[in-house]
Image (tube, one colour):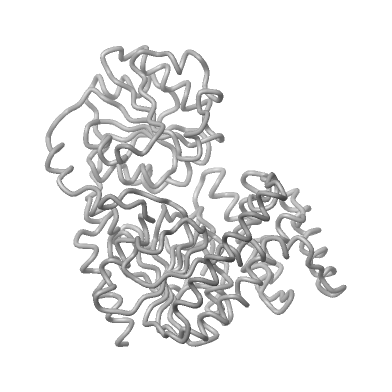
Length: 474
C-alpha cells in the first residue's frame, strides 16, 4: 500500500508520518516484547497535532480522591469477579468509550447497549467496563467492572522503567521524531505505551479465562494491547465504528505497510456505519457495513417528521477549543446577517460545564443564538428542526447530512478531515458567515446529494446479528 495523496495541511502531515514510519521501519521495533510504534503511533500523532502534555488519568487528580476511586473500584471488581467465577462466554464486549445516552430511560453507552441488547438472547455475553459507572442491572448480560485495574496500571505506568536496550531504541526514535516533527518521546507517550503493554497482560488473562470466540469493542486509540491478546489466543476481534474514519484518522490508516502485517494489533473486522466508510479503512481489516444501531434507535420517526420542511434554523457544531474562536465569530456573523434565523450552537460534551467562562459576552447574550449545553434532547432532534448546519470535522457533520441538511464546512482547524465530502460536492467549503448567507439567500444546494443509506445502513440490528453469526459460524 502506498500513501494516499491529498492536498490539505492535515493530509500532508499524515503522508509525512506514513513516509517517516516506512523509511525507518518503525513497525519492527520491539520494546518490552511489543511493537512500540504500532502501540504508540496514535498518541504520537495526537501529540504532533495538538501538542498535548496532560496525563488524563494521573495529572490533576488529588491523591485522596485517586485512592478513594481505586478502593471503591476494587470492591466492585471483586464483587463482579466472584459472581462470574468459572463462566465462559461466546462474546466479550469491551466498553472502551464513555459516551452515555438515554435509551429507554437508562443511562447507558450508546455504542454498546443496542448491540448487547440485540445479541443477548442468542449469545452468552460478558461486558467489560473500563469506567466504573455501569450499574449491574443496566445491561442484559454479565458485567465485570475493570476501572480498578485501569487505575492501577495507569499509576504503575508512571513508575515503570526501561532496560538500557529499550532506552536506546526510544532515544533513537525520539531523535528522528525531533528532526522530522519537532517532537520527542516524552513521559506522556511512554506512559501511554506502557498502559497498552499492561493492557495486553490484563486481557490475555481475562480472555484465556473466559474463552470467547469474539471480542468486540469501539477503538478510541487505546485498544492495541487487547487486540494482540485476543489474536494470540486465536480470538476474532471486531471494531465497531464509533466516529468518522478518514485518511487523517491514523488509527485506520496503515497505507505505509506492505502486505506483511504479522503481529500488528489490527482488528480482524471493522464493522462500519455504511458502505461510504469502507474505502476509508486503509488497513488489512475486513470491512462489513452493518449500520449504527444507536442512530437507528434515536432517529426513529424523526426523518418522517422533518421530511420536506424548511426551517429558519442553522445548527453550528462546536469543535471545542481548537476552533472555538472561528466558530464563535461565524455564529455572531450569522445572527447579525440573518436576524430572523435561530442559530443553534451545539457544544461538545466536554464543554458543557462552565462554557459561559469560555465564550465572549456578545455570544452569550445574543438574542437569536441558542446554546445547547445538555443532552435533554438528542442532537438528532435538533437536526430534524433545522435546514442548515455549519461544522468542521466531526461525526455529527455526517449525521446532519443524513438528515438532508445543507452543510457548510468552515475552513478552520482540521477541516481537511472531510476533504472527501468537499471534493465529491456534498458540502460547501466556506471561510466566513457572509458566504453562508449568500448561499442561503440564493437557495444554493451542493452539487451532489449523499444518500443516507450509504452513510448509515438501515436495519442495523439485523445486520449486526447476521454479521456476528457469520463470524461465529465461520
